[in-house]
Length: 105
Image (cartoon, rainbow, N blue to C red; front, side, top):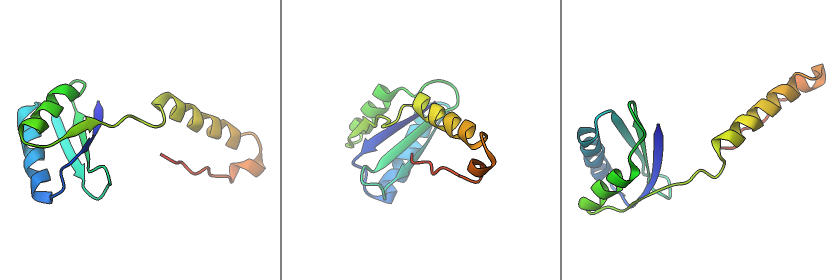
C-alpha cells in the first residue's frame, strides 16, 4: 500500500533524516520526498500492510514537521475504467487503433 503526504520539509538533508527515521521506525516502509513539488510530497510505501497515516503524521510532528494525507483527485476505480474504455475504443476500428490517448494523472 502507498500513502502520499503534503509536508513542510524543505531541505534535502531534512528529507534524508526523515526517510531514515521512517524506515527505521516502521518495518517494511520505504519513503521518498519530492521537494520540487509545491506540496513537498512524501510518498510512503509499505510492503507488508497499509501505511498507518496517523502514526507517520505523529512521528513527523514529533520532529517539528507538518504532514497531512493528500487525497487522490481521481479515484483508482475511475482511472481503471478510463483506461479500460480507451482500450476497448482503440480496438473497434483500424482508424482508431493509431489513436493513443494521453493519460493525465
